[in-house]
Length: 125
Image 1 (cartoon, rainbow, N blue to C red):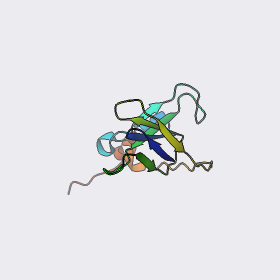
Image 2 (image 1 turned 90 degrees about the horizontal axis):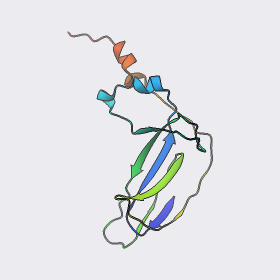
Image 3 (image 1 turned 45 degrees about the horizontal axis):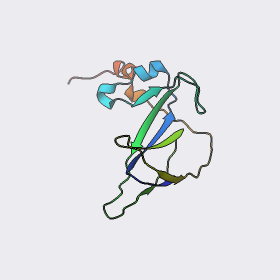
Image 4 (image 1 turned 135 degrees about the horizontal axis):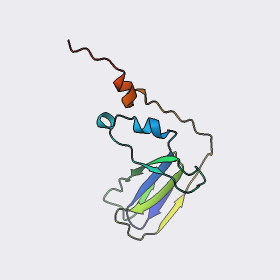
């Protein structure tokens, strides 16, 4: 995606997380931290009610010289949005080029779940 906006904007990207509730609740958040997740309540194009989704936000480095707030950002995700830091109104012109492909979801949480940690033996010597 390439855009130009009248104010500095954040770029938000979200995607479905292929994880069930029991695996999600078993993640050792004290060690790994929390994922910023949300549950979808309505049917959407990329998922169904109850799907878990996560998001991330990119704040482009606009520099100090240019009067334009522009960036080009490669991304992979289910949705994309622009917003200002304080929800101020703005105008943006943008273009998105996409290849629609079947995603390859890789979820390796063996060392991140409480169940695995509980089955690990520690030697105190």
